[in-house]
Length: 156
Image (tube, rainbow, N blue to C red; front, top):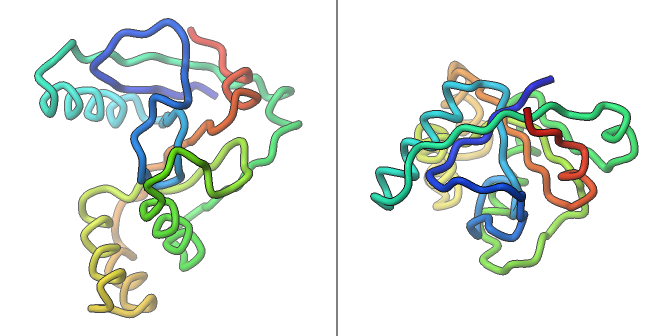
C-alpha cells in the first residue's frame, strides 16, 4: 500500500515530535492513501504559514514490519472513534495518551469537526452526532505514532 504525506516543508527524516498537539489520533506522523487529500493538506499548511512550498511525499508500508506493531483501526465513524478523537484533541501535552504504534481511521475534517464541537458542547447527543455525519464521505488517515511504526515506512 502507498500512503501520502502533505506539508509545506521539505524534510529528509520523519520526526514524530514535529506534530502539532491536539490532533485527531494524537502526536505523530499522519498519512493518507488519497494523494489529493495529502496535496490539499500541503496547500492548507502553506496558505496558513505563507512559508515553504507544497510538498507531497509517498511511502510504501512494509507489511511484514507492520505485523509486529500495535494497531488500532476504526473502519467508520462510530461512538468509539468519536470518543478517541475527543480525548486526543483535548490532550495539549507532548505525551501520547494511548499506546498504539499505528492508528487508522476516518479524518475528522471541517464538517465532522463542527459536529464534534457540537457534541463536546452538549448541543447534540452521540446518536445525533452519528446521524449528522452518516452521509459524510469517509477519508482515511493513518497515524504512525512511534519510531517502530516509522521504521515500517519506505519513502518512494
